Image (tube, rainbow, N blue to C red):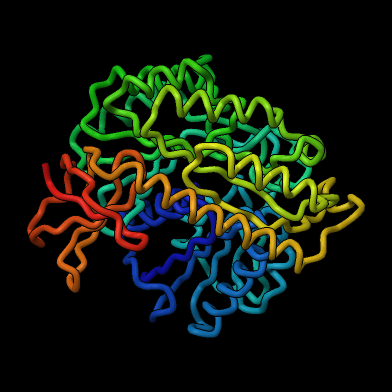
Length: 429
């Protein structure tokens, strides 16, 4: 059977659908491009914002327009939250919730056409942990590895716990086995991923600190990048290991969400603005070449101009590298959706733009500070027009390197030589 796949949302979603794809290929099915001549389409959905919901519906309808006779299976977070909305789209054949999503692998083999769509969505209690890995770039040098799923936090703006359930983690023995298998891999970077990665807790008691210690002692050929981790979970012991490590990348992505103490409390985040500020300054002092990415939400209910200015001024004053800016989106069945003093959409957009401009400024400052330094670089994509390889350093600087097309996609030592516009150029050491 010819099967196409479409993923909406985070790297975790991508890792999960990639795992499903691999299993179906093992069973003899052929992967074809989305919106081609497919026999079946599997769409993995997201529900983090209203836009994600809309994107999910848009892709489902696009698949149906392209090939009305194809088998259409919809899985993922939006499928868990709104299965009946999806099933109401004429032409959808089956909807799988979070607990059932991997059942699509066997369901495709036994599928028989029905007049009405099938919906397999149960509650989120006692969800199992499903392992997932995926290649995360065009040249197949980077892999995303899912260690943890779900979240036990109760942030007032977030619907993810209602879509993915409680926190659960990969068994530690399985984790060790997976990393042992990587010794023969042609992948040179592994990204550790999870919904709330720092909450990793195995059934045998190991925490995320134990994961970091194990990886550091494992003698891997790959470099390891830690994906988004909550400020309150980025422990000093982890920082000490990363500081001295030749395995872990000097790169952290840390959610702030708001730099206003009042808004942070309304969001029910588990840290204070002062704690966050001390953390960032401590990281930068300990690891001077570290790249620091920050998540922030603008336009939360009740956010005044003064509250926004507190966020802007805090971020402007800190040695961060870039921002992921999210415009607040009301989500049904979250406490924030019922809060008073909604921020007008035009103000949300203007604040989003202001922070994205700040992000550009901060990234340029960081890139300039790295000129003349030596870092590890993995070439990913060859740009025929410019005769350069692009890729990322260990501390997340995007590089253009002049080299022959025959350059192997493995780690090299490079020196950053100049910044032209928003591009950093480098030479082999």
